[in-house]
Amino acid sequence: MARYKQIGNERIQLTAEEETALNAKEKAWSDKSAERKLNQIKQIRLQKLNETDYMANSDYTMPDDVKTWRQAMRDIPANYTTESKYDELLARDTDGNLTHSIWTK
Image 1 (tube, rainbow, N blue to C red):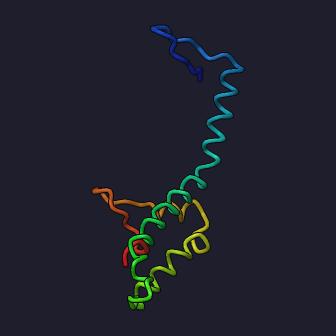
Image 2: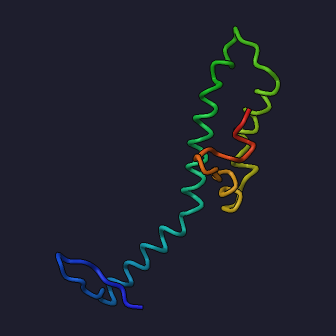
Image 3: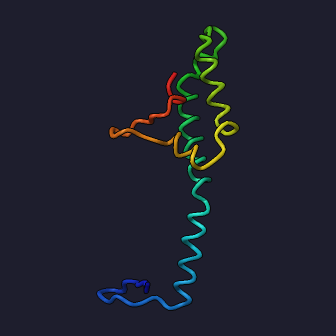
């Protein structure tokens, strides 16, 4: 199927060279899908851990369930290693809230 580019008001078919370059760019983007998802998971994890960092102060006794949860957060990269597992971690409900149980304390 022919692909096109828009130049002003004109729609012009891509040359073979342009199409090859575009296909390579799209493949590179697709190939990094898992990496992008893992980076997003790590950002969410960091935010969640930061929310409970105050509990790690010496004048606060961290509850065992929070210690266990924080360890589960740190273990995510080792325990979730495939793109399908990343999709599970990134699943959201209709309100945009993460639905995987690991995110809740």
